[in-house]
Length: 422
Image (tube, rainbow, N blue to C red; front, side):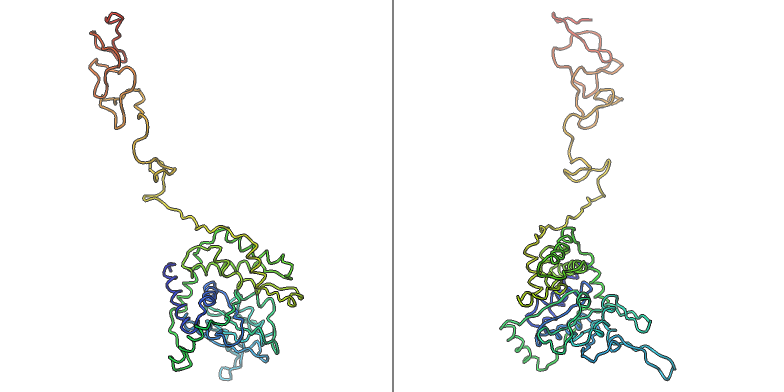
């Protein structure tokens, strides 16, 4: 799928989702970038800001099958992945798939279930497959997880372990809407006259895969890749950090920046794209020292400080290789004007080289091609003694006196009295 078509589709997806989630164009763009990059997204913010609504809206707009799994303290891993049950009619155990077998899974309040159940998502999120009792089942493609978490209520919750957090490509915060946007939410609810919001799909699962493959065509220069590595490495040397971002963090940062560049309607990545997604891509991969909570230092503050300290490479679009019409320049084929590999159009400066004999005329006495002029020095006559053909003029100096016609290469020479010296 060509990138210009991808740009139009992504703009339509964001416009459709924004009909339900008002005033959150920035976070919605980052979430869509995570989906285009093939990753999973963790939405962490206070209740009532539209996290669940955003997940449902993306599933409906992208045309993906949607399932919601409410994580509770008594949830078991088999409730997530599925299990084998005995079929009395067939007298055998058959596999009953769990909620993981869907296009987009909403893991609501993922931090309310024990780590044992949270770990059931690890294989699915990383390898797109589920293993139950020694049998491996592939998940449908595309498969994405959008999880929600409440960061202010800790009673009866289980913080996600570092390995689980690292599986999420992004952690996005919504924040409170502005006054005008909040009024718009109320106005739309009154105009809708119902609670449910219906969104028509813009894509289907096959087109989502095609868009994701098109994102792989975006150019990433070595300077941008080095910038991502330097940002991730800088988080490991900060005094406030216990464990910094891993190489997987640098890779995730580059992948999200590439998808974000597509949403900005570009086919190459700039340092501004990296900066726009650095906080949601790196902050959740950083573990602070225990005493930092007393100083109210957050991982987001560390990433912002790193962005201010690490110099960004210059924003230079990648160079495109252009092949002139008719193929590349080569021997006997002129290249573009002023380029190496072929002369510019027009005659070459200076007199053209004559035949090897030094005569301006060809063997038959006819004039040479364009650009050939009379050579300085005595004109050579033909062997028969007849006057030279066109193009051969008289020698400069005194006129030749009477005498026998000049032989080959010889002309009359006059003496001091004007006579001919033989």
